[in-house]
Amino acid sequence: MKPISTRQLYRVVVEAAQAADIAKRVGPHTLRHSFATHLLEDGTDIRIIQVLLGHAKLNSTAFYTKVATRTVRTVTSPLDKLGLFKPEEISPDG
Image (tube, rainbow, N blue to C red):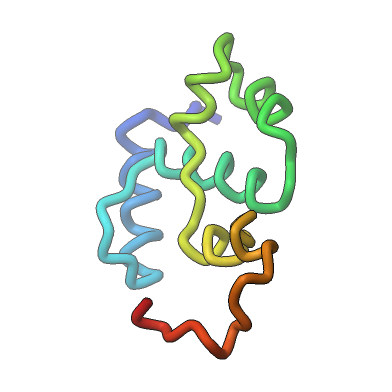
């Protein structure tokens, strides 16, 4: 059995994205970004992700981890904890 080439891997990833109706441009490196992002969203320590990705510097790992919008929305601001406003007093428009 021959190893898969870079070109073949790229084609497989692109075809899978098309089959899944993903319009965004993707490639094999997208899998690396997704892997790191999902681990981070599941609460894995970024230093463990650093080791799994084989990065010498934590800054490199931070670059690869993209936090999804839905995750950001679940974070409570320290200002919200002050209790200055009741949730119903704040309109969605600000």
